[in-house]
Amino acid sequence: MISSQNRPAGQRRGRLRSAAAAGVVTALAAAALAALPGTARAAGDLSVQYRTSATGATADQSEPWFKVKNTGATALPLNEVRIRYYFKADSADAAYRFACSWAARGCAYITGVFGTLAHPTDTADRYLEIGFTSGAGSLAPGADTGDMQLRFYQSGWQTLRQSDDYSFGAGQTAYGDWSKVTATRAGDLVWGTAPAGDTPTEPPPQPGGSGTLWDDFSYTSHTDARISAHGWSVRANSGGPGVPGATWDPSNVTFSTGNGNTVMTMETSTAGTAATTEQTEVLTRATKFKNGTYAARVRFSDAPRSGPDGDHLVQTFFTINDLKAPMADDYAEYDFEYLPNGGWGEPSDILYTTSWETYNPDPWQAVNQHTESRRSYAGWHDLVVTIDNASIKYYVDGQLFGTHDAAYLPERPMSINFNQWLIDLGGQTSTTPRAYEQQVDYVLHVKDQVLTPAQVDAKVAAYRSAGTAFEDTVPAN
Image 1 (cartoon, one colour):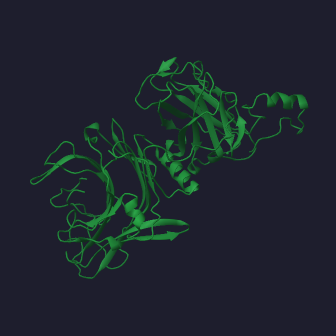
Image 2 (cartoon, rainbow, N blue to C red):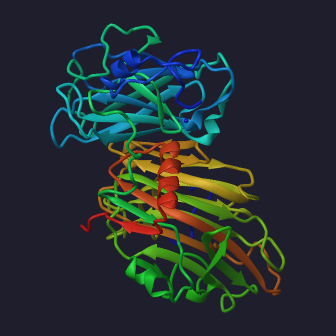
Image 3 (cartoon, rainbow, N blue to C red):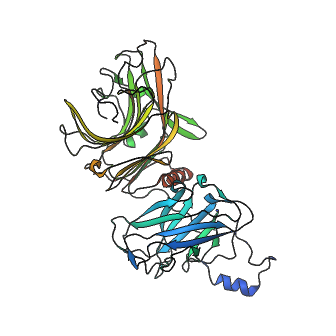
């Protein structure tokens, strides 16, 4: 992280029902349904409407828009619902990305993952599965979700052929019931007809895959051998950023377990002098992370755990590479920085997100773009930054915080870092010892994929449901 010295201010799923109302199904009807293994066996308690705003046989992206309607008599929790849209891949190795352009209930509560069909057909060998987080809430009887304006595209923006896709309907330019998509509720098929032999009863996609770093920080102490084996370094060497002469103490990085979950705590302490100032940092040894999604759940603190308040403290989650020369144009850094007591000319709490192109340490010159919010961010927060070939986007608790320009995109891979340090000793001049804490729940990086915050939540939940504490499939450079 850039030294603070001379840094200017402001940088900164009801169940499957019987087919007849009286609960009687004739043998003939049963036989007919058995002949259609991918068809919902009865009217469910929801319906799915579809339309498309991209009607061409080919397009740069497919745009399946949906509404889910509750046709039952009781509330429908949306997090029990999964919708599948079936399509034929444009090539065997084609990779796809999902995006939500707009949704009446909010894109942050909608997830999208891709899967491969066990029994490919002439019109389908893949599917896009749409789900909802608990934040999407429930539908009252008779209510619908409103617009969900969704889209997907090839990762390299190659042209898509839609005319051979099972679920595509070129004539569906207005919403209408669409049986060529399926919906399940709590795993039961309640709407639509899947391609032959592909009833959506298989388990959901598993977490992981090529190009993912996931760590739940389930360690015992800073000396746990797994920390190093998993590619992390707990800093002990001297140097910036922060108070000149301060130390970086690995023993102040601890781990605690509560409610079955382990969190990492980083303590920074001082008694008002450089010699008594101990800062903390945890970082990846490898610089192999570039485009994609970075996410962490971090707890910021406004007040010290003990002692007087007021120090100019910085609590962070960021990515960075080295500055090879002053103003070198291949430098990159992307920061979340929380200052609970101000600093850099700010009088009180402020959260910065900053994207760096380069800088000159002496004389100080910086080329960056930043977004800030002047309010308290004490407590747990979900932090996400996405980097693609067009922009850098920062999210806090599912909401877009800032978008930065393509001029600040990285040219070289970076490391992933957390640290907590003091800008100076001017915020609190007392010699009474005090200690501040920043906590980290998890970190996730998905290489070359831009995920929504809701997709991040779904991926984290899948890892934890599977009992996976660590995975690193991001290739070395």
